Image (tube, rainbow, N blue to C red; front, side, top):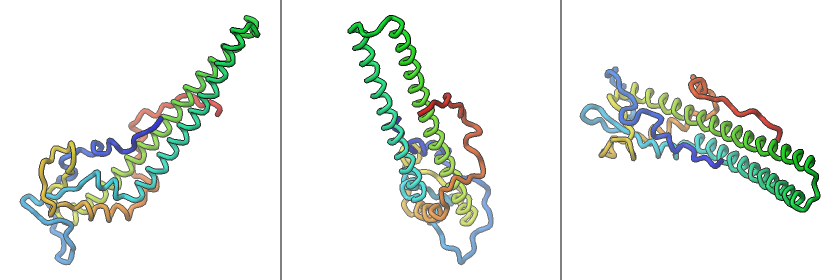
Length: 212
């Protein structure tokens, strides 16, 4: 049940061009530029670096990882207890201590417990996966808010994502606006409040809940 959080964040946003629109009015002379203007007015961000620098995201990620570890631990303990009961049943059955009727009853009981364990594991997996999806969607929404703000403020034609798998092969550090984006992102808390619900387009059907 261990989960790898945000390993797929670099594929959430259409990599290459994050924002592309017609030029707007230039920023006022008193504004501080976040990256040197180049031909085509193109800048870039390092998405992996942003996920590491976003304090609120890291806090939520660590909390979710802790929940996953605790859930995994609890599930392992329940499975170990079930296995001990199965071994005890087999020992009693093989030693002739149980009647055929008792053996059938015990087998049904153990089968029900096994099914319950499987359902509980699936429920926990889906619950953690949903929380991971919500965090990823909130991060994406907050990032796009910041990028749109910066794009409008400095009239960038393109804001690219640079890193492994992005298709952008070479960049100049003078056009890197990652520090400015990170600074603005850290002013937006990850509080679960979003303009859109990430679960509406996802299959959130869960396995039947079982008693713990």
